[in-house]
Length: 432
Image (cartoon, rainbow, N blue to C red; front, side):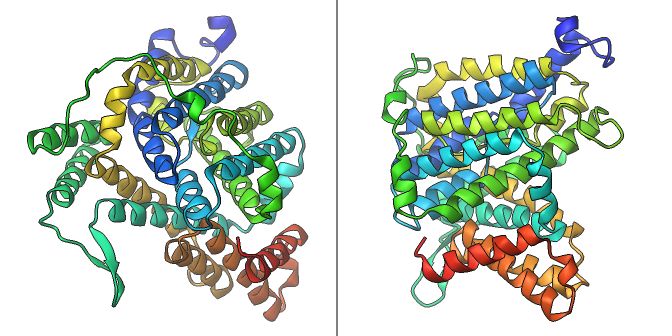
């Protein structure tokens, strides 16, 4: 074990790595509840997505742990699942099978990029301000969905949206659950989102809003409802090129940014560079591709991995420990299904994760119009158009226009200019 994970070389022990794995698991396990809950709204089978979520996470995280030897966990990404369910399927009328096909194509492209240096060129071509804006915009979009699911915000014929009935039992319980999670978060309790879900579940049961499952433990079934159901032909017949690009773009730089942040926290960067980056990116790329085949949205490196690093995790043994614990969750599918069916249990997690993603707004140079206004459009238009791709596309179009008007053509990378043209064509001339 010491040879495989280089424990002594990185100044850690097996016991420390195991504890780090448990800590990371508690902070990210909420995804096995939230992700199938979100994708089931796109018409997908809940149990199938649940199993696919766990298996895709295990495959990608095992590669990360065993081959890249990093204490980083990979699982279906928040934001990407919302984009899949509410924008691609719900907003565009695309079937979830075709949407999975788009995820698969994006995953294959991600694999190819991971094997070449073009991935660095692609990342460098996108202005930093827009990268931050995309993260923040997705966060605002996730929060908006959470508020809608809890009916804290509801549709209005006169103002489009308005405040819901806060006296409604489910809405009131959501607010209580949100406050509970925020208190746990304020006191830096490990796994505050998951623990907040469990507390809210108990309150829901006491209020008669939650029925106990017939069994707490069961052999997982249902994967056949989602596995190998992807429709790749439909991706190209529907012209979902912007969707593919959006999946690829977000997964690529979100994963890269998270990996750099966690590796830096763990002291694993060398000369500010990320060793074995190819293996780490391949782990996510293979996870995304595997997830598409099994029936879930794209995977991404989880910033929650930093919680395990904070308690001493330095090697892939932390990631492998998380995989073992994730495998055990497969036995509790009846409980997971009940928890995910109650909006008050899952909505607070969406709201808080969205809030955490908005943190990057402080890194945007708001005094610079050419940088700030396109970023502003991305953040605002994602929730208002109910489309992550549309928000990104309009921001990408406006950015080079402002730069060119100010005579700063050299600030716009040729690849980024190509992205802008393609987005313009997609938004103006195509329906998706």
